[in-house]
Length: 345
Ligand code: SAH
Image 1: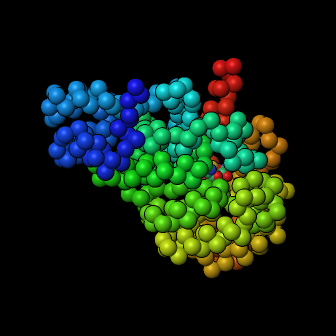
Image 2: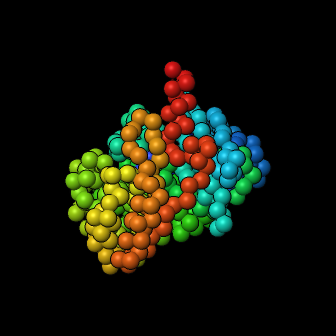
Image 3: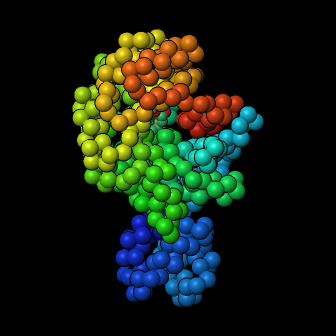
């Protein structure tokens, strides 16, 4: 029998489980607190009866990841973790330190099936989605290992979070729960390549997280060349979904735009981008594209990026260029996992 992982359950599900074992509901709160304070075994849970601890151990586990490898940037202290899952698969997380606190970038899947042409994470396709436990434990393990408190979370690691909707939603609830990791929704960003159905589903949940949308071109045809997801969900449909999200949540959307030389960094692109988002509550993040060995995309030069930024701000958009952290440890996603997998063969 495969034992169920208690970290895959929301508080409500844990409560139902505890009741089904013939226990009082308040036991769920005790167990939940122990789990998110980092208890690894049931014998740690000293305020539960021996009988209950044994019953739990017979039927359940508390999942946790192992650190397979860890790289620390000499430039800015950014830490890149390569975590090993129970089945041997590898995922990456990156811990970055900013003035406003420590931010972790977490993965939501092993690999990715979205196929973005400039991205390293999608090269081997999707192996599987992560469980809620595997997503949250990236944060818990990184805190335990680094001794640093994490205050912000970005779901911008390997995988497409809206392609793993139910598990991501459970993860978000447990991160936010006051007896879970107690991190406010406002400190969490979720990035999507544009899975329109998922955007509507997320709007329905109406959580005050920040939605980030990976746009990368304001022209539908160009975007389709860069991002196959645009075939299923063309740009006009995506824009309708974003407007719906804004109307429901009132939360500013963040737009990610990887600057690729000669592909999407022309003045026409900047003007079209401004037109597309005119009057909408958005912030544009320009990201100089990271080199990926298997891909021949080249990063826009500094002058083009500056011109692009100027054009957007003159046209009234809020725009910044993302600062690069951990450039000496290949902090950008997908690349460490790939190279260690290649060593294994
Ligand atoms: N699947 C989600 C989240 C993971 S990717 C999404 O697409 O948003 C996180 C961000 O990194 C996305 O904006 C993605 O487009 C971007 N990205 C991927 N490869 C990149 C590269 N080589 N250089 C710069 N940004 C990249």
